[in-house]
Length: 224
Image (cartoon, rainbow, N blue to C red; front, side, top):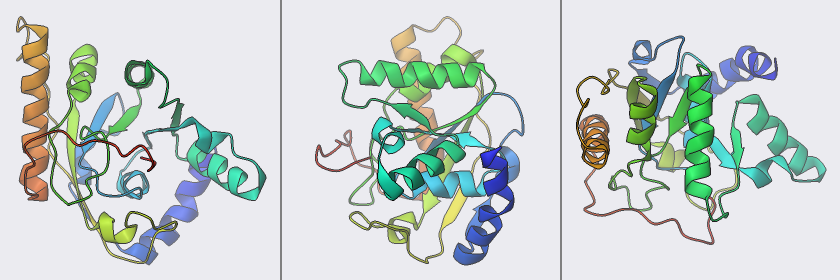
């Protein structure tokens, strides 16, 4: 209910303010489970994608965004609940698997799930090696993966900025990719790596970012 309210009130105003360039929105299935796998440049990415996608897209969000007090806590809790974010404890010993389990349940319920396979924001603009969780989800569910390339969101909300600025940005949704049949019988580890690399190649082809040879690491003092 709250999502629909925001969709018909806040969304038009935000689109008029930021005037994003949106390419390929028709590639996102309007129903059924789908994974949106994107590069990650800014905290604002989790606003940019739901704002421009043709359906509600859920992302994982730190549990503390839902538990704050006072006005700021209410605003944070209301916003992340409204856009369908899924709370997760990022600092637990099983955080990675718990995150995947929550995403899997959302997909099996027919939802759209957004994921950043780099794991955290790129601070130098390069595209870092994708982690294989996205492939695990795709192969477990058999659902399509829509590669997403964001451009300009790093100027929309640079690292350290508390609020988004008025900057144009671009969101490109690529053609859906499916993997289950093509990787039937392939050893699990090999299949996950190959699928992950294929998704990264699709994102890279749209974003044009320089490729980093290794994985990105999340600074412990900075929130995702």
